[in-house]
Length: 174
Image (cartoon, rainbow, N blue to C red; front, side):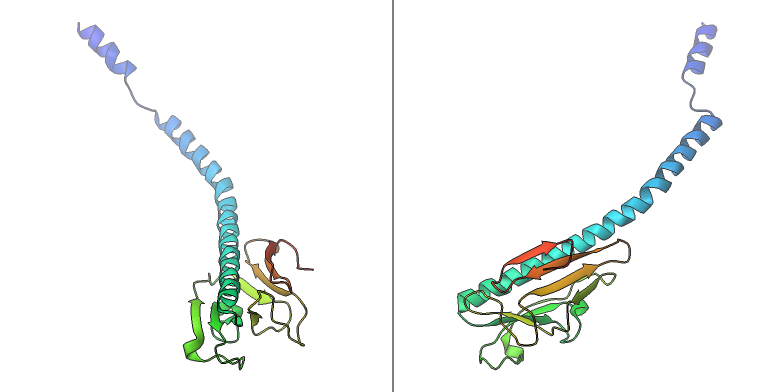
């Protein structure tokens, strides 16, 4: 009986040190290939999330303008850089100058690793009561905001046409 007990113990033995080292090396090789692509996936998701947030913000501004029948503007939260976030405000007195009581919503949760920039030096855009983009002599009939990350090539663009139609694109708006 002791012979049967000894053979059973040998059949239940664990991994050898060499087998364990081979598995660890294989996991290391797989991780070396997966981590860079995972980093790029995270960067792509951050850009996509920011673009979707901007589209949602612009849709909110447009719908508030139509609902109120007045101009609703979107501008950088700090008044200068689109990287600081965006603020939506209803121009209640029609002077096209922001006053603290006119603020509807503020979004400042943009990722610091992303760059947001407009085509040209636009300090704000607006939607009229009919949903159309507010015209301005210094701008074209389209608003473009690009979102880029140092970890990916290319940018994503948020495009707003003169009619107020908001869309996203992987190339510059035209």
